[in-house]
Image (cartoon, helix red, strand yellow):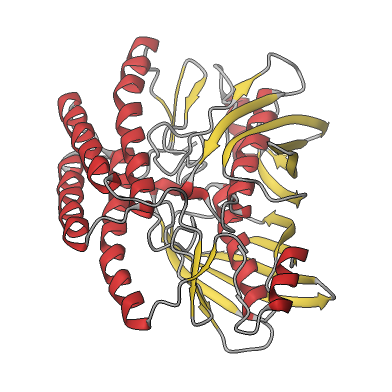
Length: 222
Length: 222
């Protein structure tokens, strides 16, 4: 499984990296927001741009050749580059998904969406709702022991989702062979705003890799 | 229509702002990528973090109270905070959507997705494909003179979409009263990877606002 790196970092090293990267990523997230909303004068915009470019050069002095991939240690994935949950990805809100210890894959997340996720004025972009719910569906399937990649995703938009504090919930509806039918929804201050259903399928290469593997099954494919 | 600001900026002012903000946003986009991929040492990570926080403070000295909204001048929208197409939003790749001058709303875009959009290793996150295709469907409906907000969105994932250079295409399939059925797909090096269908509906408040309005109809609601 190329890109699924079993690096087996010890838990204390994972925690050390988390403590290092979370504050940097949060600062970059704030910079994304400020870049959308700033009204400072043109010279200041240009000056900030030059300084951002210099910081990029400093970070790039040593870097991965490509994207982050998904790294594993002791059966737990670290999808830190993921655009929904990735703690090193400033594109992510981030959405920190919690797992119920249940057989039907119940998961939930409370999170905040600001200016960077706006579609219609004041409302969450419909595609951002889809992005988040796709992740929630994938994690529900994985939490229920039925990891898979999205085969079909259907979203029904019941009302506009206001920017601000939101909640997402997901669960496994039913399982049929290699197909897992997962459901999820997004909840705003006025109730459910978007409903999602996903058919998650474990691809053949992943099934074969898992069959060969003695150790833990990755619960995470999205 | 709160948040739809008809500021009627003259074209030369729009161009001036574009020339100012595009390079800043591109620098921030690079910073997002470098934050995911950097392997510089811990002290340097912490030093960069402090400098990013200082830049955020400089940009926030004067800023909009809330999100950017959508601003209009002479009938053309400037959704510059949009997470797919927004030229001031570093969350956006960006996807620059081109419009055919046709009645059935043909639109297309060529774009590049890097580390910030990764789901499974080396592949585009399924939800990112949904995010982009939702925007393409909305713009197809608008380009065909049938603007709407997404009512239902269905995505079929045919194969993994590799990170890199991609193309999206959208068009109006059919119109039935206030519902516009739009279709779109994502194309990678090995052909179509994701197919999308959206039912776009113009909400009542928007229909009423348009009916009252003498001037141009906004073609953009997503």
